[in-house]
Length: 229
Image 1 (spheres, helix red, strand yellow):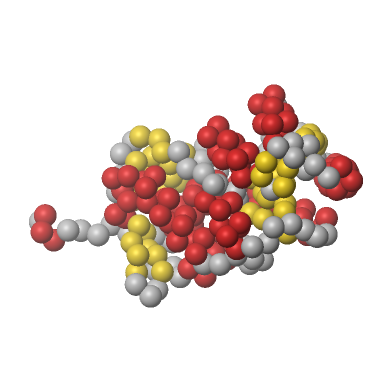
Image 2 (cartoon, rainbow, N blue to C red):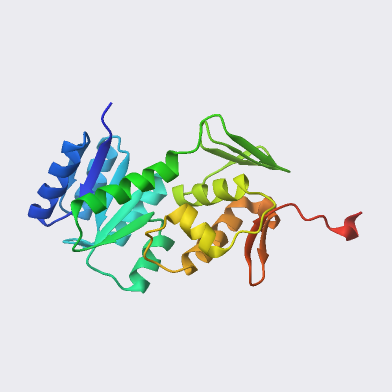
């Protein structure tokens, strides 16, 4: 069954070029030329990936990403001419999974989106991890805290999956960045700290498992409070 892409790009020539390339790779592509049209198309169908331009006729793509995140954890990939770090960080804070900056080559764009999908969905379905009152089931991408399901964005899920796979180990920010965002990620290590903060909040009563190791990185482990013994 073909994967389906929602492409929100108001430059019709670029939109046609991206569509043609993905369709040659076996994708089905639904095109939108504004933020409102993108949300309408999204609500009408089922998609595997959203490519979202930041500069749209009815406002920046940030509000579209924010609206998508309220409804879904679908991977969102920004395509943009805005290369400033503050714009990238804002996008990540709103739940975007990655960026590519214009001008770009179509093979590079495609490779980056394929790598993103592999990182998000590449864990083996039979893998299950448990630590104290926290569990992660890769078969249905379900995270539970005290037997209650927790909602995570795709990037938060990837981050937790990587930490769970290496529980008890101290992982540097650069290690996490390479594993979760990829070696070709163009942002800074600050994005790791931002997502760790969000993940801690999502884990609620299990947030203490996610330890900050000063000048070293992060570690997922259970710390016993000796005063409670």
